[in-house]
Length: 345
Image 1 (cartoon, one colour):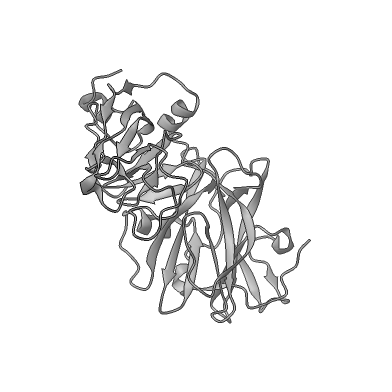
Image 2 (cartoon, rainbow, N blue to C red; image 1 turned 120 degrees about the vertical axis):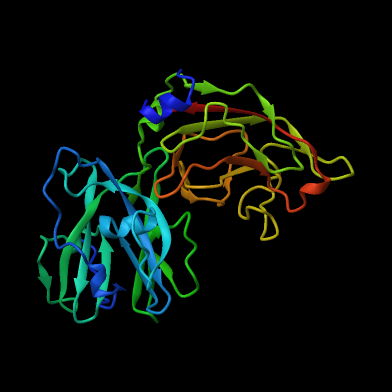
């Protein structure tokens, strides 16, 4: 437990033949030419972040600290690129390659100003290699090592291709809905969560530092968790819920899991069950196992309960956890589920 917590808390062989595959980016986006030597302070996992330039029609995905800090609020934004978000985490390229992983190769073509991220063994090589078969692409760097198999809570890194823009994108396909024109063609591997100390305790089912007295998340209200022991970056949470919500004036009741019918665009969180319990954080971001990172104000499903959520506030101050019913009209609701939040730090 760090000092801030202790003060605030009451301690308790496929071959690409389309040579145009790539993601065009500014030459200035390529900051480092090779992985740096391992140091004792190197983290095991590093975030993989995606950016997009509408002017260039370009998706650019990297673990370079000079770029990831733009997504995490540690350095100024690039005027030509907007942050799509953290896709997940890969093993640090500055450390030895773990078993069960493949390198994520970042190829660069000076003649085309194109980037191309892949784990395909057909593109294996050493930093500095140049291929004459594909418009002179040079292996610029290894972005990290990605798991070849799905594990509990991991999310896929998927590659998409847009022939009209001669652009590819490597993103968490569960979180990033690609625009028209991009089509999926390959899964590069599986991204991991941040593996924070608190998250590891939660996943190991160690006793929580705090467990709520059960409380009611009112069905006609956006409820803010009281966080009696504070809610801070690095914390892990598990939410459990039970009971029903009346969702109209005629007495229809729904459980915390909602309807089997999927919510449309007129619901707060489309694509999940209507009338289920959902949540969000108001600042920072939260890792939702099996779905990926959700930035502030981005809703995620809760239902009867979550796995180990991990909260990150890098680049911002801590916010609140809020819960509500996935209903486009909260005003005619009544009652609400009984909620318990378990917390690790």
